[in-house]
Structures are given as structure tokens and as C-alpha cells.
Amino acid sequence: MARKWFASWIVIIMVVEGLSWLSYGYPSLRSIFTLVVLIVVLLASCYRLQWGIAAVLAELVVGSQGYLLAITWPLTISLRLGLFAVVGLATLLWIVRDRSIAVLHTRYWKWYLALVGFLGLAVLTALWHGNTLIHIFLDANGYLFIAMIVPFTQALRTKADIQQVGLAMLAALTMLVVQTVAILFVFSHLAAFQYYLPELYRWLRDFRLAEITMQDNHFTRVFFQSHLYVLFGFILASCSFILKRSIRWSAALLGTTVTLIFISYSRSFWVATTLVLGVLIMLAHQQRRHWQLIGTTLVSMAIGYVVVLGIINLPLFGSGAAVDIGDLLTDRTKDATTDIGGGSRMALLGPLAKATLLHPLLGSGFGTTVTYASLDQRSIEAGNDGLYTTYAFEWGYLDLWLKLGLVGTILYLSIIGGLVTRLWYQQRSATLLTDRVYLLTAAVGTVALGIVHLLTPYLNHPLGIGWIVLMTSIAAVYDRSQS
Image 1 (tube, rainbow, N blue to C red):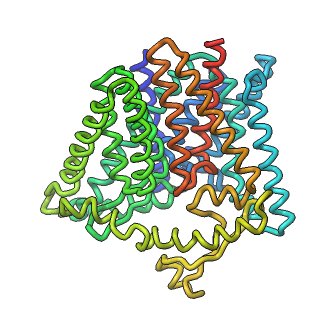
Image 2: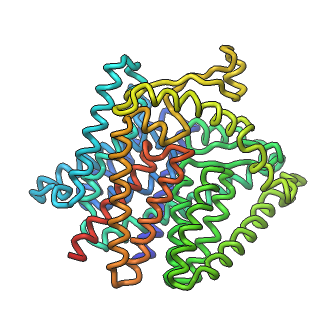
């Protein structure tokens, strides 16, 4: 049954991505395809709400910014927002049918109510300070995903429900791996695929799926925002390996995810993976498995490095990236604070920190902008001496402090800390090995999300909030099963 469910989601994701590609060539069909998908999800959610939740989570894993499909007239409504709406509507029907709001029967509803209260305060604060309305909306709309705690807890009542949506996410992760490797291969062989590259690049760029960047060493960086879930896959593999469950499968998944994290060429993910690995090694030490985990991870890194070199340098019709074995790693690690990305991030740090101190306790509200000297060539060419003004910041915790204030930031982090503590306690109390793996992954994954947010903001984005909401729902399920 599990294999059929996994295979079904592979097919579903392939179909949706096929419709996305087709709608790029025929833009008039994009809204129609999106409506069809949303109607199918609505009907499936009305029949079984878990199916709608699985669709939401699968889209998070493969959809990056949520525009895999979209309704483009009269307003642009992304597939992610559409799924949010139809699953929310189906949840109202289930609440009426069940005559119960499940989230109110958990210990966590007060946490979310307090957080929503502070988010509302951030909107009022923004209006008080005269922030631009469109900036307020665009800045705050990512937090709307917090409302998914109601559908998630309404749908996920048993461990079987968790396993069902988990398989959908694993299928989506599999597709993300295949897609990333395929894109890397194609863009590393320009001569062989020159007739297809422009359209493929525009589809990925215009639908906000991935960033394709040619590095100085001729390596093509393929970065999906949803590669965050590859990091969670790495943690799942490591936790499974530590607790001696499905060793071969765990090692294979560990190697695959390590390779994908490397391909992303994201220094934020590299730093987070290194720090999380340190946490995992300490946990493995308790099981006397630390040397095995270290050895397996190092071997996986070495194999992944060789595999990536093979993918990009494979001579196909006389083409290949011809990336040097040494430059593949050192090109991304040298000048980390002086290149365009790292230098701009460092240039932002001072002005952003200064802005947080203007209204330190309650913040300046959503849509607050900061101006800094960017190293991005586009900003320099635009004039203004390279000065760039934005309301979106790479320094995640300073972003929270600026918008929500110190009080709101502490509240948000207290919720995350309380969730990690609860998951850890449940993991210690669990008797089944499978439960321990899931709960340990949930706890460490939430810690990893907090680490990534330091350099790349995810706690204010559906990709990160979706993980927090799912982990809260899992904690609620185990609260009932262990009571």
C-alpha cells in the first residue's frame, strides 16, 4: 500500500509539472490547468482531508515560491495560495461534519493565538509608522501559512495519517532530486542542449522555481528555495542511521541529500548542514554510533563530489563544463564575505541592525524598508551610487526583530523552542523505533530550520512555516498516543 501511494504521488507530481511546462508554452492554458488542479484537490480534500494536506506539503517540497501553476487573470493567484484556499474551505466542511475544531483540543492553540496577535500588532504598527501598503501586504502574506495549523490538526489525527503525508513528501523530494540533477546535467552541456536551454531557463525563472547561475569556475549552480527540504531529508537519513533502522536505505538517502546540498551551492545550507551534523554526531555518540555516522557522511560527501564532477564534465557531443576538481569546492568558499552575495549581505548588516534599534521592543512593523550599498551590479547600473532599498532581508533574525520587535521575536522563538522540547520529550518516551526516528527528525529538523534562518530567512516564509505547522501537528498526534 505504501509503495502504491508513493508511486501515485510520483505520477501526480510529474503530471502537474508537465502541465506547468505546457502552460509556459501556451500561457492561455495556465489558468485553466490551475483551476482544474484546484478543483481536483478540493474534491479530494472533501472526501479525505489528509489528501489535501499531502498535496499542500508536496507542493512545498517541489514548488519553491509557489508559482508552479497560477491563475493569471484578473489577478495572479499562485498554486500555493489556491491550495491554501481550497484546503481551508474543505477544512470548514470537515469542522461542521466533525462538530469539532481539532486544534482547540491540543495544547498548542494558545501558542498560535499569541503569535497571530503579535502579527496583527505588526500590521497595526506598520500602518502607524506609515509603511507602504503594498510592502505591508507582500511582507506579511507569507505568515498567512500559520493558519494551516487548523487544517493540519483537523486532518492529522493518527500515526497512519502522518505516514501518509510523509510518503507524499518523500515522493516530492525524490522528484526534486531528479529534477535538480537533470537541470544540472542539461546546463552543464550547453552545446548538446542549446536549442532547449533558453526556454527551460525562462520557465524556471519566470515560474520562480529555481535560480540557475553560472559560477566563475564554470559550474552551474542550481538552487531551489525548497532545497530546504533536502536538508530535512539528510536529517531523516541520519536519525534513521543513528537508531539503526533501515541502514542501507538510510545510507543511500544520506548520500543523495548530501549531493543535492552541495549542488545547491548555498553557503547557508552548507553552514547549517555542518552545524546540524555536529548535533547529530553528539546524538550518535549516545548510541555509540558516532564514528559510523562520521564515516558514512564523509564517504557520502566524497562519492557525491565525484558524482557531481561526473555529471558536469561528462563529454556529450563534445560538450561539458570542464570544471577543475579543486575549483568545484574552493570557488564557493573563498571570498565568502566579499563576493556579490556575501558582500551585499555584510553591507546590509550595519544599516539593518541600526534600524532595529529605532523601535526595539515592538518593532517597526511589516514593510519597513532599509537602504544599503549593494554590490549587485544591477543596483550599481541603476544609479543612486549602488544604494538599494528593500523590505526583505537575508539576516533572518534581524528581520524578525525589525518587524515584530524584540517581544514578538522572543515569543516566536519561544514557540519553536517549546515545540523542539516537546518533540524531544516524546522521542525519549516513544517505544517503537519508527516513532523515535520520526520524532527525532522532527526535533532536529526544527533546530536546523532555526540555523538556516540565521542567514537565509525561512521562518517568515511558507516553506519554513509549513514545517513548523507540520511538526506541531505531529506533536499533537503523539500527545494523544502517549497520554
